[in-house]
Length: 369
Image 1 (cartoon, rainbow, N blue to C red):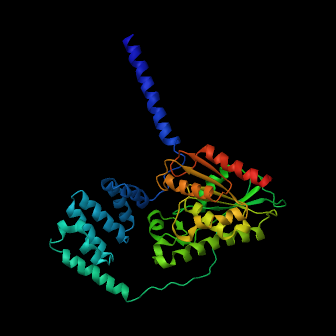
Image 2 (cartoon, rainbow, N blue to C red):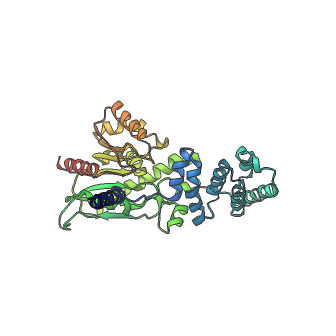
Image 3 (cartoon, rainbow, N blue to C red):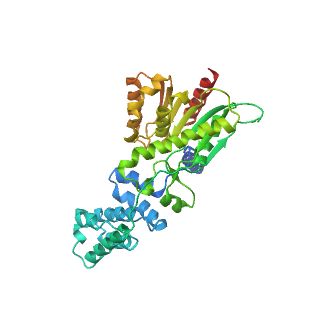
């Protein structure tokens, strides 16, 4: 009897462990697509410096020229009193080209190592790096170039038929195939989805994973704040040009398309729609980020003027774009009396199956009208 009871308990425990493992594997909607640097940033925002260190260490290991991240790692070492590691990391940053010696000199975080041997020599090396960089000053000018976009054809696609069009914008540090794999789950039989690449490559992240990671903000090129509006509008106009291109070269039905964006792409969906309100019938934003530039909320009246409605989706436990961002969008839509629908759910920085189903229903309904 006792042996049988022990065996039964063992089997139950084994089943529970298996179920827990299954939840861990299959309960996650998608793998964590964030880079080491993005995961470190999550801990840095919460001032969990000790938790950020392993991610920063891995990041600088594959990106030895990301000297800014090295300095951040050195600061984290100082907060947990690993001064030797902090000093070595600063030296590495100087050797790889870090040039802001005054920032290090005035940073009180490094006071405990300020008077140790070699610190002043390290500052001189940083100053020399800055002097060399200043020899070739940077200027910025607009450019026109060819960009790529990917196409998701519907199931049972027939080139003799015509289809509705959805412009889909991917998130920061992504590229089109990531979001298009999700879009396949919408299973829209009468819709062609086009997803343009964001125009700027993120050099450091791309190098760390040996695959392209893109952004519409050009962060790695060091644009000054005075150009941020221009960069945003230039990227938005590139996205809009893909809509016009698709309407010309693909079998698209007459009528306005829908624009949909995830994360940074959600922000840009708003920018594009408010800049070209006569060209879209509806906007869908998913876990949309927000940038203070471009005055998107102030331009929301354009959506009302042209009768564009909005489907706003956001996860309540989003670790990348805070849920409060969705509230800002929602309040702005209400203040402008723009017809909209809002769906919250819990799935981190992604969508649940139910949220995906609602997106498919929204698109289907709008193309039936």
